[in-house]
Length: 361
Image 1 (cartoon, one colour):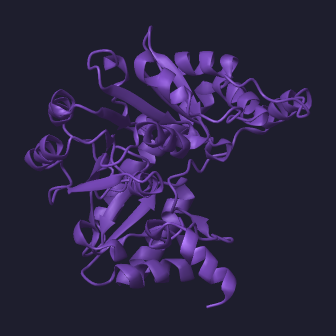
Image 2 (image 1 turned 45 degrees about the vertical axis):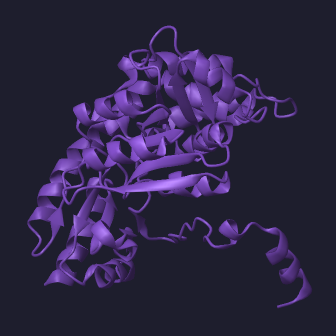
């Protein structure tokens, strides 16, 4: 170990040194079905109109720090109830970090079901908070008694409920979420990243519970490259979180591009409709594969359990055939032998199914 490494080991917090950086594989030229992205691009005429809009953007000036014009459009597009505040972030990840930073204090904890979105635990660690992961039941539903017991015992400052859940794709029972909202003394975040595919939401219920906020992203609508997330909820929470938000966090190109895209929401809605239809077809086709168990999904991906002990071999075999999905088997526990497949275009899904069939033949 050289002197630089010794110094880094001395000063970097042990809990940071103990974790691994978030890794995103390079897909190269493979069919990319690993990251829950919308596979569709915009019509050419729309692209040209967008480029023309960008011509008038002055990148020599700072963006509107409050992104007022974009926020107004998002309020309408996302059906944010009157009287609720809106906070924008550089993707949902930044919003998660803002909330954790605002609520962090010695002994305070973040709670979430597991398996769940990995950034809940990572950001809790970054912010020096304890993390409590409560295992889901075997069918991926919430273990409500276990959740409520941990809430009563630990009194977490922050609870994340992804709805639908990532990576399992299911919607937790509404009555279970209501029970958590009534029991929790801290903030409960309904993470609705996949709301466009679930077509169910707690957004209309903002204000009904004093500890409820709703988080969304435009990434799954086909705008993943813009990195834009939003948080909606009562002013008492969001005005405090806004103090933690770094100035100018939504750059001018994202503001203009997202505003333009929302003017063409019908195009994005049609793309999500196509993905929902393909999700049903892909699910039925996966059911027909020998030894494969797909789980019902309300998102734009499907979790599937491979034949025992074969998930990694199938994952590698698909890569060798030019198809990239997500191998979750190494996580273990409920995700042993599991693969997560993003719903692609019909021809991409056909290529996946053909390769999958070859590997199981």
